[in-house]
Image 1: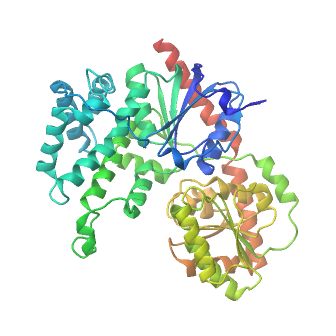
Image 2 (image 1 turned 90 degrees about the horizontal axis):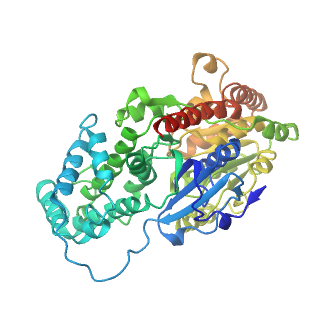
Image 3 (image 1 turned 30 degrees about the vertical axis):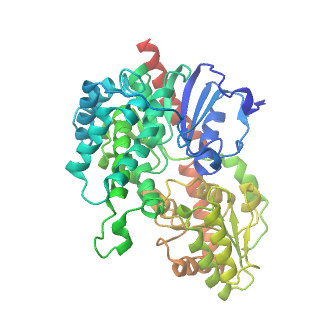
Length: 515
C-alpha cells in the first residue's frame, strides 16, 4: 500500500532512518533516485523520513515516484529561493564565533588533520542561532563584513571585490539556511546522506547537534562532479576569462573558490560520517585522497533485482536488433551530443540503425533543445528518437546495445539492468564502467568482456565499438553471456541489501547505546 506524498509532507513523524537527498529522489528520476527507492522499499521493517534539498523551486515539479508506505515524513527545501525581504538591522557579531569560523577555514586548507571535528562540534551549536551565527549575522553584521574584506585582501588578487563579495554570499547563504533547518527536522535514530555537498553538510550539522550516527553513501564523487559542472557554468563571470585560456590555463579564481568550497564541506562530511560507503574501489581511494579516514571507508556495489530482468531476457526476440539505447537524463554530464554524433557514423555504415534517447528532458531544457537541433543538423531525424521516460524493461526487450557516453558516473544501475536483460554495453571510461565491462577482481576479469570501453567525448570510437558488436553476432553473443554471468555473480540486490542491513543495524545499535 502506498501513500500520496501530500499525506507525509511535513508530518513531523519520527523515523528510524533520516535520508538526506540533494537534487534526487523523489523529484528527479535517474540512477541515484532508483537506488533510493530500492533502499526504502527493500527495508519495510524500517521507517524513513526524507529531507529533499533542491536549488531553485522552478526547477522541480511534482514527485516522480509514489511514496512507499514506510515513508512517514517528507520535507522539501529550495536552497536558492529568494531570501526574505526587509530592512536589515545593525549587528556586531560574536567575535568568538567568527574566530572559530576562521580557524575552521584554516583547518580545511589541510588535506588531513586539523582538529575539524572539535571545531565543527562547537560551531554546529552556534550556526543558525541569532546569538551565534545565523543568516542575518552572516549577511549584515560588521564582523562578517570585516572577515570577507580581510579574506579578499589576503587571498584574492584577480576578480573585483564586488564579484568576490557576492560570490562568498551566494556560496555560504545555503549553509546558514541548512543550520536553521536542524531544529525542525523530526527525530530520527540514524542519518543517511546519499552525497556530500549540502545534504552531507546538513547531516554533519545534525550529527554534531544531536549525536545521531551518520552514514554516507557516495554514488559518484560529489566534488568531482561539481568540478565538471563549475568548469562549464556560464553563470560564473571572471573578467580574465574574456581573454581566453592563454593567459592562464588554470580555472579562474571564482571557479576555484567554488570548487574549494565544495571540497571543504565534503571534508566536513567525511570527518563526521561512519561508515563512508563507495560503489567501487576506485571511488574509495578517491575519498581517501580527498580526506576520508581509510578505516571508515567501505565498498558496497549496487545490486539489482535479477528476477525482474530475467523475465525480460526470456522474452527477447532472437538476433541482434540494430537499435542503440542511451538511458539517462538529457543533461551535459551524460554527453548526449557525443551519442548523437556517434549515431551519424553508425547510420552511415548501417542505415537501418536507430538510436533511442530514453530519459527526461526537463532538467536542462536548453541543452535538450541543443541536442534536438544537432539531430536535425546531422539529418538523423529518422534514426534518432527522443522517447522520454520509459520503463527500462520495455526498452531492453527491444534494443541490441546499451550506450553510455557520460563524462562522469559512479556505478550505473542501468548497465547491470542491461546485462540481466541480455544487452551488452559500450561505455566511456568513467567511474566503475571499465570494471563493469572488463571485470574487477581476477576471477571477475577471467569471465571476459561484456562490451567495450571507449574514451570520453569520442564519437568515432563510440560508433566503431558499437558497430563491432552490432554487426558481429558471435562477438555480441559472447559479450551478452559475460554480462549475464557478471551481474548474476557480483551485483545482486540480495547482497546489497544484506550489506546495508548490517550498516543500519549497527548504526541503530549505536544510537540505542547513546540513549
